[in-house]
Length: 224
Image (cartoon, rainbow, N blue to C red; front, side, top):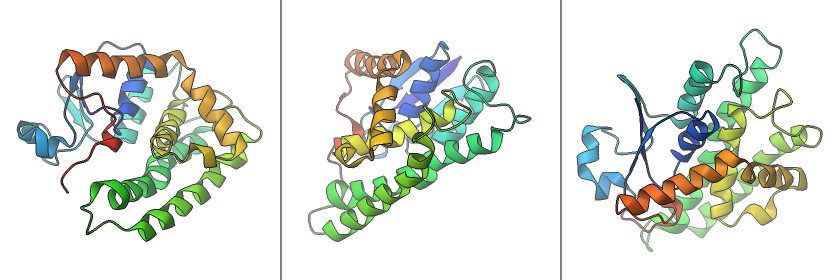
């Protein structure tokens, strides 16, 4: 049985989106954000108090891009995985981890220093610097998307889920208007995928049923 611990539109959305793309049965456990503050019992599940926390029977993982990699390799060989013996495998790994390590990283600093820190500790300079950082890093995928519909292999893969979540987070931070045209078109395509829509609907329905806020985690004010 697959179980996902999730906050609305947090990094764990990558995993939820993957589960919908693969049409896998799962149990979705919604948490208030941040769970380390508002759901202290969750620390017994993940001592870091962060999401995702992902279980596949006895297997346990917490890194969103790695979980995407696992799900694609284990369940998506005929759909959204890229085989290691194909020419596109290196590019697949590049963009799968680029989505988190290069694109999502600066967005977390923008969030921290523009929304999450106390008024005294907020820094518009840090937020502005990392906004420029993020936008400059979009050049990497822009160069690919000028000629291709997806970031690798000429088709939708788990790498697009990883990169797509970073664009989703940037959109929540009102940065989508600054996307280069190829990236904006790509983001529009991703949002139309049935699995993406189902993932949004699943988190909202689960939040309502479990009496947890459906406000996207990046927009929640919380104590640092």
